Image (cartoon, rainbow, N blue to C red; front, top):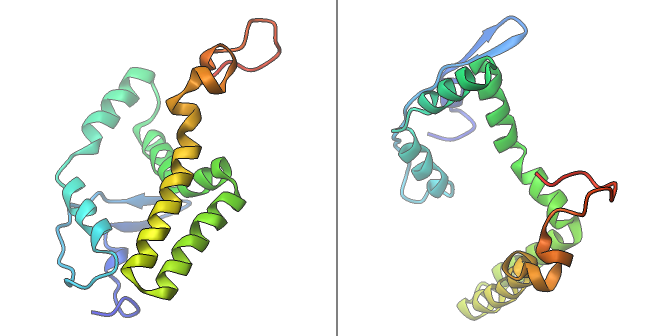
Amino acid sequence: MSREGSERWRDGLVEDGDEPVVRLRSWDGPWPDDDPDANLKVDVAAYSRADPLLTLTGLARSIDVPVGALVRYVLARWASGGSEGLLELGPSTVERMRDEVDRAEADGSDAARLRAYEVLRQQVTWLDHGLAHPDESYPAGGTDPPSGSGAAPAG
């Protein structure tokens, strides 16, 4: 079934006044072998076996926050993760990474994809340097600033 004609995405979404209501559904497909979103759908199917409410209701009870508010928080944090990642990396880094992939895809050869992989590997290694070697990258190995520095505590 084409994506344009499918209404499957609405399954579980209920309009209820000002607040949206979502029914948590298990889902295991199907999807065609050549589906460009198959990797995500495999993950959706795998995680559909878990019951996130066991953890979320326990946490909600423990911190005295309504479970619906906690579910909304978790979804919003996950859904905004791409934007958060862009802010952390910066647009120029993301553009350089995207340009490498675009060049390789335009060329279409395995050699071009391997060259792009090597460039991306080097970029990720550079980005990870501070995490992998905090003593070389940050004063005091990345620990919290000394008290009285005016900086907000980490975390």
